[in-house]
Length: 220
Image (cartoon, rainbow, N blue to C red; front, side, top):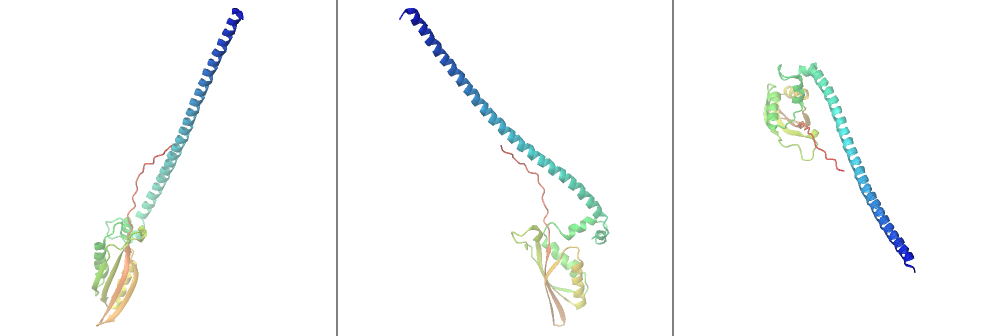
């Protein structure tokens, strides 16, 4: 083969090899850019979803806050009405106390067996002349584990003697009491020249509710 044609063939082969290399680098670069674009797109989609969750959670919090503010205003209005309630004023423990204190006295937030025992002796039995307290026990741990807050109560047993009309007056005092007193069992015994009234009952209390702010972590 003449040297001129051989040189032409070599140049063509070199051009073909160069074109192959160029095409390879072009394809590799395009694939690399496509891969990077795919990764970036997935990352951006994940970020969009994550920020959407955050925004939705924030909107829920804002809605709750608006609802709480509205409820707080309504609660304040109801409290103002209760402050002027004639029924609450008529059963205040003292002239200086607030009508709202009557509600707190009716259903205390803290258990106190000693105070309950003292109240039964002084404000009920002791307030009726002619009655004699035979025995009194107050359960300091009457709320069993697992009971709901509304079922928490002190249980008591008392035995008192006196004239029938005085015992009737005592029961009327229990009925008219500001604090809820539930009589669960009652027995009357007569003998030895006296009438004895045995009473079993319970006095509920409502543990205070705690309001706390919580941090919520939103994960991607």
